Image 1 (tube, rainbow, N blue to C red):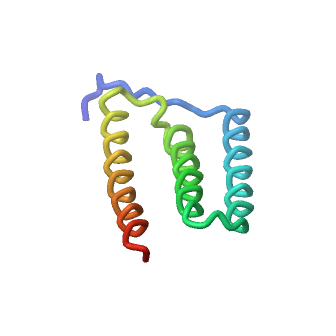
Image 2 (image 1 turned 45 degrees about the vertical axis):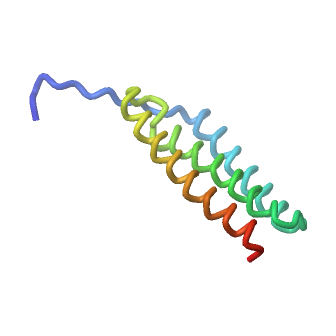
Length: 99
């Protein structure tokens, strides 16, 4: 590795990490509460939406993706988009099949 190559490191403040942790705990409590309510087929959609929100918070802040360059953010977004498409296709297949 070159000596001239500088790495930019971002250190997350304790306050920001605490806020994100609090949000994750709240979202987890909401996930548990929603799982106890019978929403029919929408239980899966609610669980996936909450899980996606929690995953995005972890990726953005704890994995420091918020502070990466645009190319890396685009690659991660593309992966998330493809995963959402595959899960969505499975979700609708099961919905219309009646399984």
